[in-house]
Image (cartoon, rainbow, N blue to C red):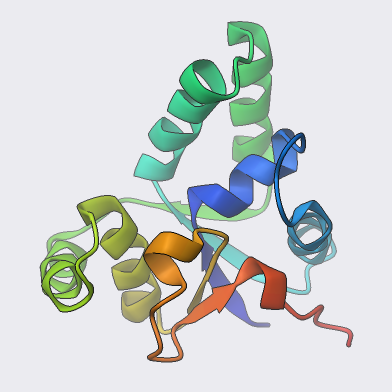
Amino acid sequence: MPAYVLDTSVVIQWFHRLNERHVAKAKKVWEDLQSGKITVILPDFLLIELLNAFIKGKYSSIGASNLALAALYEMPINIVEITLPVLQITAALMKQYDLTAYDACFLALAEQEGCQLVSDDQKAHGRITNGRVIMLEDYLPEDA
């Protein structure tokens, strides 16, 4: 089964759909994960980014944010710690693509895991043309 690294721009749409661009595609990723069609890998720092987006950006209550985070821990997701080799790849990608450490780290994890990154962050990942990134709007259902 194919594996994908997801960035925060995708995962946030599982919980907050208002004013998001590709909710139907994000829902399809969720459904493919739940049905066992795909494997999802998340870097552990995504949870901190997500919490920040919930509380500071999306104006969620603490209770709703805690429920969303708990739901992620109950899902069949691989949450991985960022290792030194991933950080070394991150540094190179930061320079190569002029990315922030966070944006480059999602891509580095995908490289380390030998899979693709699914992102809805056009500004950061839309210009990566090495075949490692799938923009959320281009995500194809596994049964297509």
